[in-house]
Length: 419
Image (cartoon, rainbow, N blue to C red; front, side):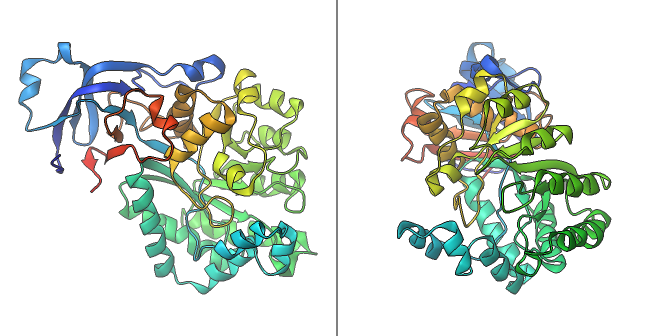
């Protein structure tokens, strides 16, 4: 195939155009399994935007005279992935901890050796802003080739005024230079630095009084996040930090219920959190509260996979009417991969999501979790032409079924192929 950069193009003979929608809607319950498709379809792109689509039999003769034409015979075309939870900015990998876990060391034992989040924080604070940008840029290039075109990136490995601001400034630079749609989240409350282990309030004061004013002044973040968990931040501490962030216009997107159910769901809902992420440990009461809220439950199956934890109760959440999204949790400690194709496959294999449910959760619902539903997440006229072209495959279900094969033939972001 010939790859090119184009202002106007038409894709013809698409075996199946997936996720075609006339209007946006956050999907819940049975609606999550509804994935509208067009067989034997065409799609017109103008200036990076979806201008028109339909069945080949309805293609007007004059439209076929466009300058550039792509023949997608045998291929499925999907909206590109929206990865709504990542920690993509980090200075170094942590494979030595991976080996320690295999040998049987617990998280506490690894942390006692200087591992865990504090390990990433130490290495990040030693790295320069340029070094962090170059590493992050390579990761963005990698995930874009795998089909991700919209992404959220968190701070949280700085755990100091200088470190957190450095991370957020790198994200701002990525926003300016990348063709991907990027949202930034301030996660100063990821864990307590060693010097504040016995003095939580002083670190919370540091976040509120020294970090947040600069974050707001330099417009470095769209959201605020807190790791609400036993041994980290309590629901009450999370509420205090979030309210401070909300006073600067930062909306909550929160780490909740990864290891324990400690009231984080209820507090997050009270804060009108855009999303509550992780949810490995959910009680019936937690599920009921989430189902009757506007918050989106973002599931991170590759983190559960990598940590050998029970997977999120996706079927219970969906059947209860919760709005569910999928994301990679790309980070060096618990999910060292941003491959959303594997996230979708794992969601089907281990969480019993239907292929249609997983694709919707990783596209339109994840777009809602990023508040980008008007720009990305579906094949809709007026949205960005962010597209995944599969290799020729027999069916849509084959895409997550053949999880070990890279079935992405090409990716377009704003109508331009990723080389």
